[in-house]
Length: 121
Image (tube, rainbow, N blue to C red):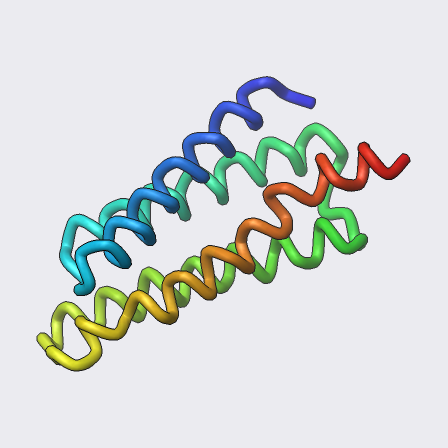
């Protein structure tokens, strides 16, 4: 695999985790959390693109399909965070972390699945 993809995907994990757990610990969505959500999304999309180049395109296996779903969820997550912050909906700002943690957990499946698949083989 392209070593750049591994580094970029590790950065995606770092950025996204900081954003999600920073928000969870603080108990309210803030603009800097959104920045980390977007940085995670950018790195994940970039790393995935590099992996597609390496393997010759999308693989329609569990990892590939869940990976695309995870990127779409990350994009929805970031967009929804932007909407919540722009609306200044205090209830949504204080409860957004529930959605964030669920999306983060789903995102971890394709992130770690190659490791589990290689251990099982």
